[in-house]
Length: 197
Ligand code: VGL
Ligand code: ZN
Image 1 (cartoon, rainbow, N blue to C red):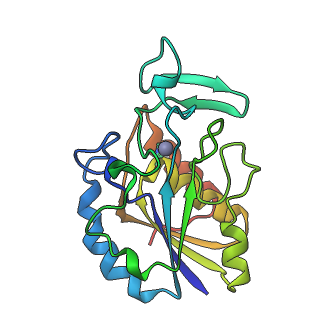
Image 2: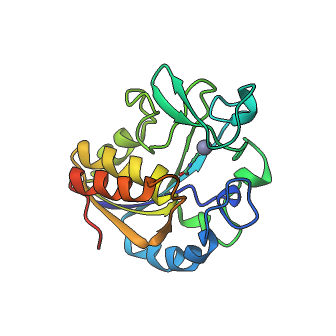
């Protein structure tokens, strides 16, 4: 079974959003057109409580894009984004969400960020997506969405390490590209055996 994972196609990551990724909304039509070709469609939704530990505003004296040390490793501090129940956290209005089989929310634990669709940033706490895919007979995943160098990258690497066959459609992703993060992400994905077709 081959699943399409549509990563974080939410208003805050698109033009005009709190953590806008350049060209984010350009990929929506292509993703809608692709979705019919898969056995399953999974949407992920970045879903933070107000005051989340990944927000710069939560840490006195810090600005967005600073790095801090968290118990689970280095963490970029982001502008407040994708707060539960807000318009910024909602899916892009043109994304065809009705065809999704499941929506995986992540980042709801106030103390840990969660880039990957499979594990929180401690690389241990599962979201449940692995079990969902396996119990449906999933063996292969294709990833599209935002952002290529953060949530798509972490999700793709985890999927490959879990033993799924992984393909990232880079033409249907857009990147933040913070201090070389895009080049680093491409290297990490290649190293994990992710294909770019
Ligand atoms: C993401 C930064 C913070 C992403 C989510 O979806 O790539 N990036 N939260
Ligand atoms: Zn986030």
